[in-house]
Amino acid sequence: MRESRRGAGTPTEEGSTMSLVKAVTAAVAMGASMTIATPAVAAPPPHPFVFVHDRFQPASQAKSAGAVTYDRSLVPTSASVFIAEARVGGKGMKNREGGEGHGQHRMHKGTFVFISVRGLAANHHFGIHVHTKPCGTKPDSSGPHYQNKQDPRQPSTNPKYANPRNEVWLDVTTRGSGKGWAKSWVKWNFRPDEARSVVIHKHATGTTSGKAGQAGDRVACVNVPFK
Image 1 (cartoon, helix red, strand yellow):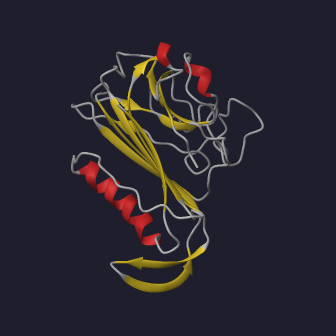
Image 2 (cartoon, rainbow, N blue to C red):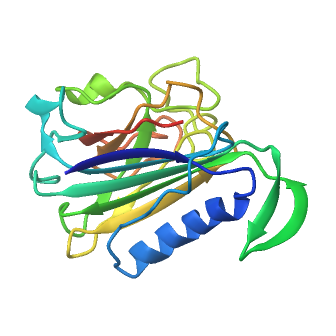
Image 3 (cartoon, rainbow, N blue to C red):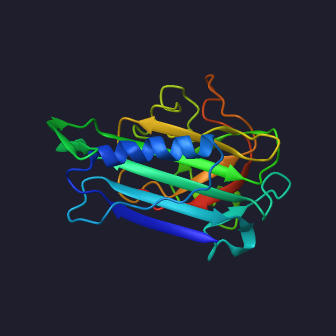
């Protein structure tokens, strides 16, 4: 099961962007199924949305699969993932929510990323981050973490660069059912074609010097066409 959809809001749909953020978060918090319709497409798109819904496949199928697992004990092939991105460009636009205009003002530039997982190992804390390359047959195929301000030394373990404000962190602690969700808001947008996947790691993400951003083995990967 795979779905990768891209939509765009019209210049009067700032309210739609924030409503999407609230709706996705509230729906998963209440255990609702994920069924979301994108706003009508318009050109040029001021802030596109991206949705990916996939079931994990064996790593050997990485060339055709949207999501792969490298450790079936933690991420079995019966598990699934939903990821959403809402990108705000920071341009001036009118806010109309509930059919009423509220004037013209400047939106804050930023990116919202949301993840929901089902069927993962129960009661486990996973470190999850956006990476720079697509998923592959090997865990390291997805490259390093995407960073807004790039650390000249890689792999990056300096908290100045490896932190949830300069990277996108989506750590999840699953419940007994194997379900969990997380969200991230950063005050910047991805550079074109430089953010290509979301990687699930074995452990929680470290924050101390020398370990910042590190979360153990890569146990699964999801291709996401971030904008």
